Picture 1 (cartoon, rainbow, N blue to C red):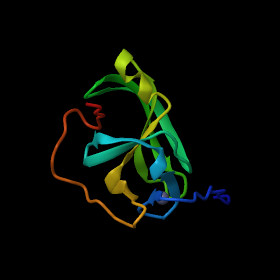
Picture 2: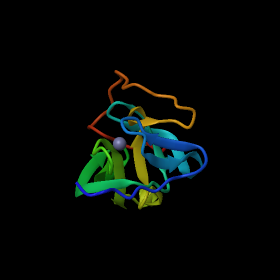
Picture 3: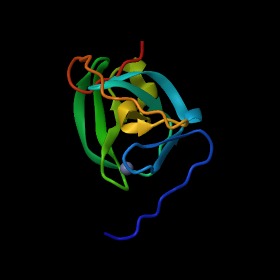
Picture 4: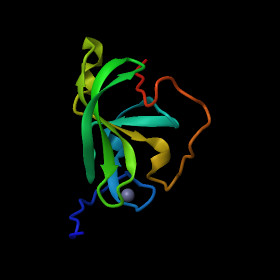
Length: 129
Ligand SMILES: [Zn+2]
């Protein structure tokens, strides 16, 4: 593999739990009331150092969305998903934004979350109540 060029963030940083690559800043959090298959997830307006997988339509708690899974560019862990298109009018604010699964990332204070045993409907899903 070639050398990776990684962006370095400054501030209150969320990073990949596996390899420590910087992913997002707490000031870019849009909402903390999202869910993934394994518990809490946060919606960010901006993230860095990720690659995205194939775009697909996915039915979520709030309707049909066109999304792509996103991966840490350094270690390849799946860390969340990105909204390409929201098909419901009131979900349009999500377009271009990304969800990071909380248990896949470390918080600004080094905090870790673990996968919870609560289950949510229909695989990975988004919530914006
Ligand atoms: Zn990583």
